Amino acid sequence: MTYGGRLPMTAPWTYIKDLPSREGKEVVIRGWLYNMRSSGKIHFLQLRDGTGTVQGVMVKKEVSEENFAEAKGLWLEASVEVAGTVRKDDRAPSGVELTVSSVSVIQNPSEEYPIGKKDHGIDFLLDHRHLWLRSPRQQAILKIREAVIWSAREFLRNDGYMLVDSPIISGAAGEGASGLFELDYFDSKAYLAQTGQLYAEAAAAAFGKVYTLGPTFRAEKSKTRRHLTEFWMLEPEVAFFDHEANMDLQERLICHIVAYALEHCRRELEFLERDISKLEAVKAPFPHLQYDEAIEMLKKLGSDTPYGSDLGNDDETILTKEFDRPVFIENYPKKIKAFYMKEHPENPDLVLCDDLLAPEGYGEIIGGSQREDSYDRLLARIREEKLPEEAYDWYLDLRKYGTFVHSGFGMGIERVVAWIAGLQHIREAIPWPRTIYRVKP
RNA sequence: UCCUCGGUAGCUCAAUGGCAGAGCGGGUGGCUGUUAACCACUAGGUUCGAGGUUCGAAUCCUCGCCGAGGAGCCA
Image (tube, rainbow, N blue to C red):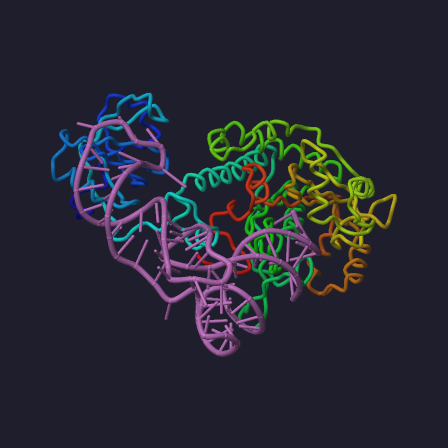
């Protein structure tokens, strides 16, 4: 079982996804054995290579006795190179099977694979995330994640947006000191970014239409199905866009992402048993509710959240069940929102902002606002919130040198993935979830 | 930080004061079309830890540890 000797890496091999087009041909595939059944004189090798799965049928009288016996001794997740002939078979899910002529063992595990064929508890699966990724469900979810990110970037790039990365280490507190991860930075303190927004605003003054995409960090001890301590956020920021244009961009972006997933991830969505009709309903225009209308509506639906409070998770769930597509909640009271949001021109107690809530109880996937562009009002807000003024000197500069109407928003990647894939918990929507009690693997 | 629930074989769970069990996985044997294959046999335990109540504790009590679900906060 010498790897280099028996398996020249320059040799061509075939990916399982391409087998249907190689019917009748002799091929070699490389991958892993994810299950095996045997009837004594015939082995059924369930093989996967990351592009698909195929059943290798190994008949005793058609292969060497040694090779047949060696195959029988394989453990689950053995890595193998399998040679055989592609054969059409109506019993196979992909329409083809592989009639095996020989199996070369790359490595046969010396102990049993921890993840079995029956159900496991979430604690065990998260402890084995590095192996759990191999399961079909996790692969389907992560393919949808990739599609969400890819389609969002494609949409923005085609619409003239430029990716301008923002720093992960920052000396400024961002949205307020609570929930920040603090780290030793040589002789002083620094923080992990909670948002790239302030940097995106600076970049918008340079490039006009920009976005950031990267990990963000919240040190809050949240223990819910909607929270991670490390999550990815897409944050467009647009010069000369007002609140209305901002929401229009959000609506177009979400529609594009959903349409892309429906077109390119149909198999994954079906595997996850997602109700596809719910996604097909996601079309513009999305309904809009003013904050006070939302509070009124919630009262009729049995919530006792008073005017002036932020909506709770239960409120979001109740509210979104009233609609078949995402719903905007606009113009929250100033005192429950961030300092950088622009005051409502007709009501100084409100700010020009929006949350976009996904249907079916998934809740907030986007938070956005028009930014305060007045130097004086922004400075006043920083003082009102008792934020460290000196940390925001550069941010205030943006209002000092050619200030401009601008707006932007943050879209939580994992929440969008959880919604589109129909997940119960956000932690499956990221390859390596970080939660309050879990940083390994 | 608060509330709720849980921790028993490698895994998923049962046993609720009276002999520690099943399914899956592992081992051995059988089976030429299996689809979480099946059949037979078999090995496998510090019941999370410490202390307590009791003739007797996986089970009841106290403390601790480790998780999960939810609240708050947020994307």
